[in-house]
Length: 241
Image (cartoon, rainbow, N blue to C red):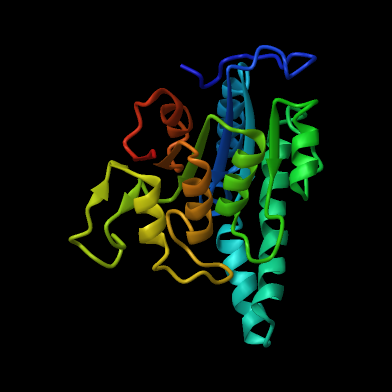
């Protein structure tokens, strides 16, 4: 019902906000979109922002992984690889900001303070990575902490959190509901390196646990899941403390 719906951003975005929402939008999800697909994501986010404050943190996807692979090949440190990946996330974020056509700042924030400042004038704030050692999931979790978000939505290329990697283990089972403590315990077993892939990275899981941030993991490749994550009709994983 939201797709294609016309909306108008209010002059003072802080008025009439129902919820504060933070999306971690996987780079692999966004980078695979053609211009029409980018516009569908922009329209959906715009409709959501008609009554909510929305922050979107975009990942680096295949672009980041390829650049990081090349950097490692020439002997770059993990910190430098992280910095290269951050540039890729900001490129993807700028593409989404362009599709939003002025509903979000064209210049993507490069710090948490910048993002919070941008929210004073825009109902949608789009950004990429911030610092080496932090994935965009962790950035999204920290923005959720700073903004005291009502919900963190991790929209990735899998449809939830599994007991093991479903691409490698045919016996992997999807978890529909779990506690933040269980999530942190499960994710702590994963390796955190530049360009690593997991439904929720270990640092983000710890931030979710410490701040009791209500979180949903959904398949972001279906744009409608950005809305279903809010109204509870999603088929992903709900993380509550």
